Length: 232
Image (cartoon, rainbow, N blue to C red; front, side, top):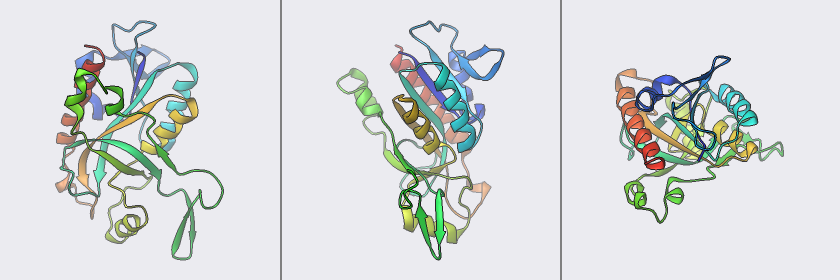
């Protein structure tokens, strides 16, 4: 199976890179890494896109246009609106929206879907549960929460804007890349899923409350175990 892992930054998957010995595969492409034991039929690749939906859509679109994969997996950290999700917890995003794509209409917001200009909501085309259904590995992922997320250019850090987006979309998570990842994979016809670890709660900006180190540690641990499950 040819799997493409996708992350915005190397920092989010540093342990994953070290554990599997990912290395730059092409001197002309500094953002694509492959494991040292890659073959034509079995390739575990890692694409570092850069932060944000524009960088993600461009880098992923370029990679998927030139190489074929059986599955793409987005890895990253996220902020959580949902306080029932613990800081550091790893979850699976199955629904993601481009929260800012649309138009203001007085006090209301019109998503592009209501304007007849396209879509702003995208869903995972694959899930962990479905991939391992009926296998010995199914049990280890049975408690993995499936959540809804939004993708934004500006992460929320002000009470009024947080209240507005919660009222409008009621998201559980937010990131800066997820929906762009789903969109690019859908356009390329590549099955995809998204895994994120919660680094902070969405609230008035306060870096002292962030747990990025814990989130990255748990994300790396999950990703390492996941790839070992794919390739025992």
